[in-house]
Figure (cartoon, rainbow, N blue to C red):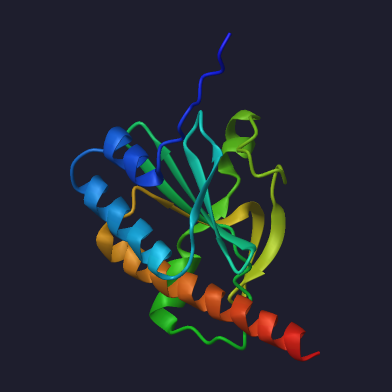
Length: 169
């Protein structure tokens, strides 16, 4: 009896298979941005096509691709005072805070692990019932991802700064 070797498709393969139209280019461009910023994709759930991205060994974001549905979830802690953010990007982020509404409306878990969510202060604004994945971007367009890129860069700068501080201690 021989074992079959299953080759895991790349995230690019999944995007080309599961998405359609402009979503393909948008998702591929965003993944290229993440790769260019030393954030390699790792499939954490092949059945649901869930891909996580780490930076310097710390998890920062997740891309979820499901049958034509592309979602980017920012799972980072956005409280980084030492890395200022412009007001327009801050407003954009605050408009995408991920509230556990699924749990509140039908009693089913949304998958964040904190049902019904936790209270958080994000960029100085108080929120209740926030999911572990703080920010959610469902089927983002290219313009939306320009803001997400700023948030990713801010987080990566924070992680790199923390790593340098740890090295110098």
